[in-house]
Length: 69
Image 1 (cartoon, rainbow, N blue to C red):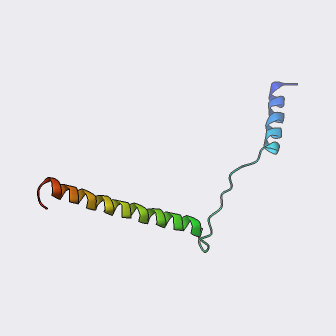
Image 2 (cartoon, one colour):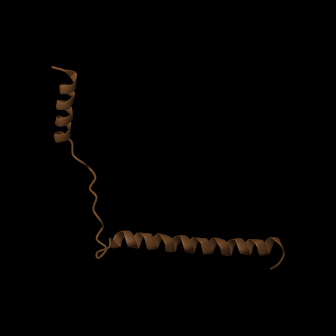
Image 3 (tube, rainbow, N blue to C red):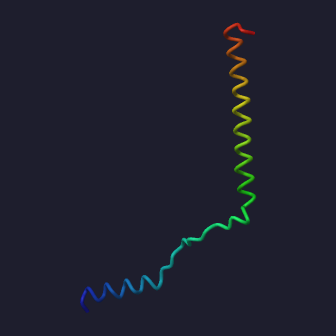
């Protein structure tokens, strides 16, 4: 059996055995995933709250070190 023919048979067999694990489908925009939306907005709000708290602490320390308060 020639090597080319053997190669063709193995590629045909591989195509029938394997399948694509990833499917391309557009997400349904009429039904958003509310868990993911809630986690995104919740984590954003938490980060902004931590940023404002840290800023207030930094301003207070700046005023204390420079004798402004």
